[in-house]
Image (tube, rainbow, N blue to C red):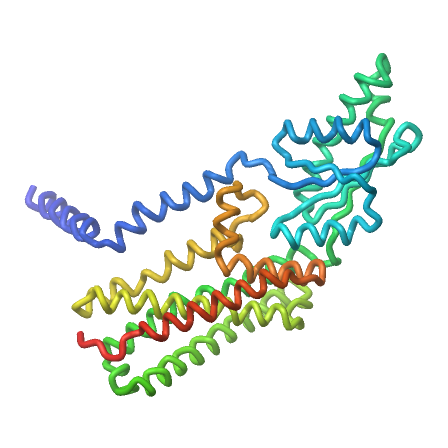
Length: 371
């Protein structure tokens, strides 16, 4: 009986310790709720895409009404687009989202070959099904009343084209993972800064405002080299075992966005650790609070589209994602690899954001903190 009571007491004591720990409570309660909200918002979420359509006026109006009724934003283009591929890419870059263009031949009665140009295979397949249903209803109610359904389906042809360079999904996946590596440096940077504080190395490294910047630069370079080492290992594994082409690694745009992601993560780490030092008074509190970089990293990665498909985000989450500079780095790198195009405004936004964030973080990072 005493043994059972002792075991019960030990279990109760451990649960009590967990419930008193803010970090443990976060991982037990808050983090699952965040995942539930993020992935729950994606469940049963149909693709939201802006569709541009032109061609035969009568059937275009019918398809526009049908697509709008299904929740697909559809805009009629008065003039036929001369170069649909370029048109789709330009619209996608301006809207920071995937778009599609549907062309209905002017002589639809004799030429029933319909073309869909899309920047996403997911959207193209979805639109093809909705468009086929709309055309079936149009033909059934207007010109082919009484014909068997199979003849109606055979009476038109829908072709889809994904407007992108010939790049595999594995390479896109490797690109996203490679860009998330510098973003994850926020966790390592905070841990390294905590170690400096607890060992007193920070006080030995700088005793004046000038040497403070030198110490920050040393940490910046050390963590960056570690991230590059991790990226190199990723490339080797992807190349040797998955046979993935790494053409994106040869582009200056990828490495530019890679550095921007690292600067953003490093700046956030300095700001978060400054808050840790301001709030903490003991070594145990610093060690516990230094893990706060993990949820921040996961939040940025999920909402920026690194771990979940941005195509399926609801409009509210898409709007929030466009505010994050980490979304713009991924958007810039992917679009350059797929379309060889760059959104200048998006590029400027992420650079300005990174510079401002880094400046603020360096200025507020404390000079000396006694623990």
